[in-house]
Image (cartoon, rainbow, N blue to C red; front, side, top):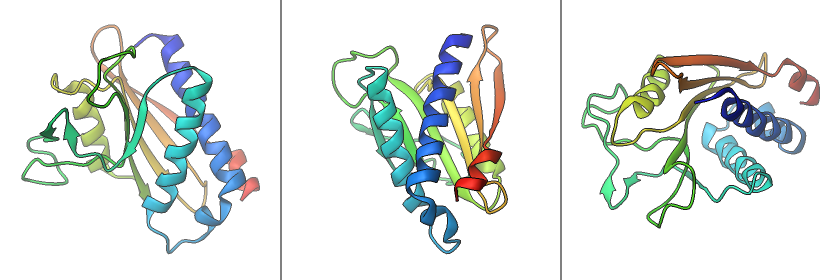
Length: 174
């Protein structure tokens, strides 16, 4: 991915995280909620900001299909059977491709801790030819710094690179 595309993805997440902290701060404050509650709102803001770019992607949660087939990532660290449902994906559903990418962004999120399993899953979704997501994102919703995220993507040499995104100024908003 080129630098312009990475910047666009950063902008999408900046917008989504800022809106999440401003409009749904009670979700970040309640330490007993499951991450799915926060993920729902995050997916909503991602979808809204994609419209700004006039992108026609679908933003889905727990989506377990790859076309008409079940989504499988053999040997993944979450499910030994290989079946998998990423927390949030930005993609084109089973329709004629009118976007730049069929599979654009895959997101795994956690409450209170970073997860090596999530990193493994999003990087494998980028590497596996069947899926070829352009960007993987791991998110940690935590009580010290409300949102910490890492972007993963392939550079021009086909190497997986990562870029850390932290939002310390969001603490004041919640």
